[in-house]
Length: 291
Image 1: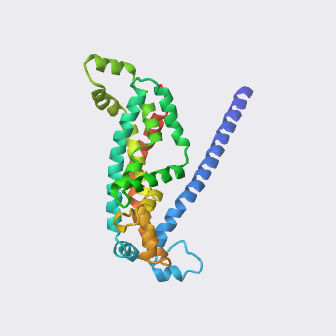
Image 2: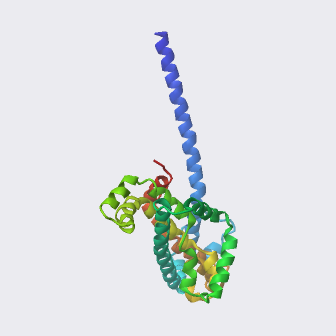
């Protein structure tokens, strides 16, 4: 009887500790979520305040009783935001498509083909990740300028059509595919290209989807390179178009209109991530697993 009572006490104590640990964990997660989401809430809240209401707030308010959508209308009329969206869409789609071809072929070569010095070449390739981006940007700027590609889509796109990290991620995924499939395909007379298209790519589809989504987000948020290589508004992207909006659109003091433009620009990426968040996480975790 005593042993049973002691066991029940230990079990109850263990459950209480687990419950307390769960409460602490969820409390910290909620606080962290509030910290992360608050800037987005503040951005949306500011975007629906009128210019006069915003300027009359000596102490910022965390709500508004008279929301307005005028700022969103101004976002498309004060500056050519529609053109910025079109430019960004072209840049994003073309860059992502070309990059997928480049990294798929490179990852296949490193993962499946055998050639002299492959491991050394791959190590040297990975070492490129250690080079600061500032040095790469300088080199790319000089190259694109010498090729007379400034203020053009090729000048925007070419430096972004490859990624050492994505090649590494896809190579690790390709290496998880059993060698027996490759040898069976070769026995059936399949070429390396056909094996890549018919076997490796379908099996690695989750990782490819993840890379595609991450690259789309990267292109959409690209700021430094487009700002550096273009000074013609006809080639501005939404990211560096924000500066144009601030200087020649609403003015520096019209913060609500600026926030409306930022909400419009951010909405596609937020929706993209919410729709494909599970595929992103699944692809990243699968790419990092061996065996």
